Each structure stands twice: as structure tokens, then as C-alpha cells.
View 1 (tube, rainbow, N blue to C red):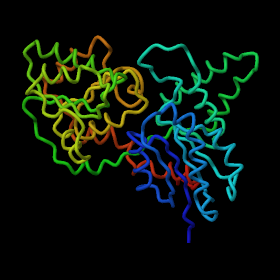
View 2 (view 1 turned 120 degrees about the vertical axis):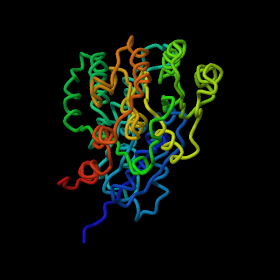
View 3 (view 1 turned 45 degrees about the vertical axis):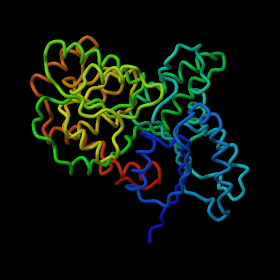
View 4 (view 1 turned 90 degrees about the horizontal axis):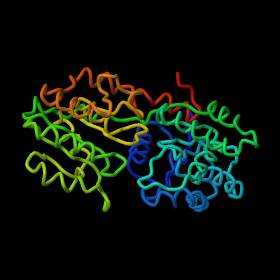
Length: 368
């Protein structure tokens, strides 16, 4: 009988895409999981101190439960510190594989306000990669920006001759999409040919998603007398951009929904009412929300930059000065993706396709 592998999951930022990924992993990749998490807040403090928190959680386990086949860390953990402290934990097997999954990297993360250039948090990412046995990125774009950032970081100390470190890290890394379970979307009945067409915005209500540009385009289209409806679904915050509050006054009864969906089922139902899903993001390393909307049949309209050209054909991308024109055209033509197109674009991101690769990367099992 095949032995079930034991996996320790350490996630100090258990929310958003991090939570979505780990919940799916535990359902679809069979293993004996132990998971320690903290709420998704205070990310800077998490990166600096969560390794010590992880050690205290491990010390709380009985001695007989401190042996694992693999440890899965997110990039919010300082793996170098974690690995050093693990040598002092009684009963720990120091040969246990540590796998680190990068949902994002701090070399290429936009700050809301201009700050003096600091490598503090990027350095934690770099040291974590060095200390990990295996590294995975959720997209090639994420990996490329990480490694280019590493090179620039190492060039600040050119006299040390450390440039080869990046090559060694590349050899230990791979691209591994975060799996998505499309079953709830596939089971949801689509609203047939909505009248008027419905535009979906399904991102976090934060500045890095650039919502001002989205609402600017909508205002321009609205002034032309073109009718549409609007779904604004996403998590808001106390300091969310003012444009969301303004939109309620500007677009009024055109708004079908505004705010966080009460449940995932409600969220899926909203996506299935859409014609077009739009992104105007300043940064995106993967984009689960867009892929979910596409699976639901929404035509994607996305910036021709960031991760999007990696996943989507040119016909779904726009250059900065093209957004209003292309969005207007999609509304007028009542554009929507046929089910077979939506499936073809998104199926590679399904857990069904990805499980063998996760078993190989995390559990060291044959992917074949």
C-alpha cells in the first residue's frame, strides 16, 4: 500500500489568492496536511517575523508529529530564517524538502506612494528562494520579473561577483499555475444574451488595480449615449479609491451589484450575467478573477502588458489609448464568449490538468 505523504503548509497571509490556492490544493492533491495560517493583513510584519511564528507552531506539535515529507511556504515567509531555526527544533528532520510558492514577488510590486528604493522585502524573497529546495512561480511573468530583479539587486554589490546565484535559482524553479476548480462555474446557468450588455469588474478595490481608468472609460462611453449595465464585485477596504463611491452616483441604476458577493455561488452567478470583463491593473502576476470570468463566458478586455499577453491572444488585449474604443465596440456588438471558447482558453488552469505536476513538485512523485 502506497504511503500517504505528510505535508506541512505554512501561510501567514491566508486570504485572497493565497487562501483560494491552498484550499484547492488540499482538496485535489491527496496528502496528509497540517496547516498553520494567519489572517491576510500586515504583510510587512508577516514577512519579517512569520518565520519565528512558524517555529513556535511547529514546537507546539507532539514530537511524533514533527516529521514531514515536505513543507510548503508562501513568499510571505523568510525561508532562510525558518530553515536556520528548524535546526534547533527537537525531532525535526533537517533533510525535509522546503518548497516555496511565489504568488507575487517584491521586486516588481508597485507602491502607492513613491518611496526611496529599498530592497528589504525583495531581499527576503531572494533569500527565501536560496534557502528553498524547490521554487514555483504562478506565471512566467512572475518568474521573469523576479529574476531580473535579482540581477539588479546583485549588481548593487558587483564587487562580490554573485551574478551566478540567479542561474542556480532558475535551475531549481518552475512555472506552476495555481489550480482552479471550474465545477461551480460550469454548473451555473448563463444568462442568455443580457439586455443591455453587462460589464464586469471583479477585482480588489485598491489602487494597484487602477479603477480610475476603468471608470474614466465608462464615463466616456456613457456620454455617447450607449447603454450598458455594470457589476462591481470585489473586496473593498477602508481606504478603497473614491471612484467606487462616486460610481454609485454617476451610474446609479445601471449598477446591478456593487460590493463583495455574499458567497462564492453568488459570485459565480454574477459572473455568468456578464458580457465583458475588464482589467486596467497596474500589476498582475496571475489573475484568477479574470480567468474565472472568462470561464463564465465573459469576453476579456485586458492591458497588453503584465501577465496578460502570456495567457491571452492579441484579440483580447488593448494598448492604453485603445481601452474606450474596444470596450465600446464590445458593448455595441454585445460580445460574449461561446462556451467552447471559454473552455479552451481556461482549461489549462484547472486542477484536473495540474494535479500530476503538483504531485511531482510538492510530493516528489512521478508526474506520469
